[in-house]
View (cartoon, one colour):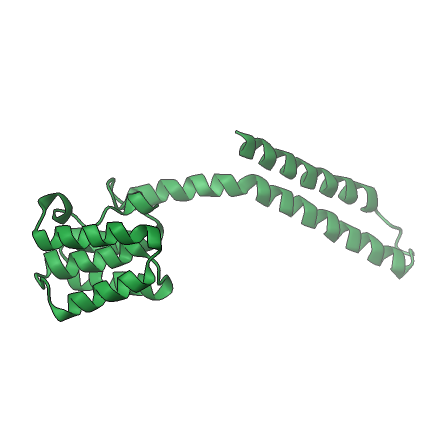
Length: 184
């Protein structure tokens, strides 16, 4: 509620300044007016217009977020991937669709951008161990060691638990890609 009030106040101030400057300094000058007066009026007109545009942008920005959320909800189903940050949605969706190679590539892209992305490492482990059936191979162990070095200290117990559950074939963990809404 306070965010809406703050947005409305800022927009009102910007639009008010724009209207004042626009009305005060925009006037019809005679044809024989000196060029300096014409230039000054033109500059103040542009200055007032800039404030009007900035005020309209501040006012319409929340509306743009609502509209984009609506269109996003049309293309992404409800569930764990729907509540995820945008960079995880594609990887989780690909894993849910059984396109594991593409999902693994997307999770790897995420870890290249954010080396401490625990959920991306969990996604890679899920795809490699459960979906692709790699089990406890050297490639999986190397990925786990890399993840253990990079993730935040508070996320390390969850990462290790997730790995152990995948190796044990726990259906609670292994029936879906990692729940990305836990880290949103």
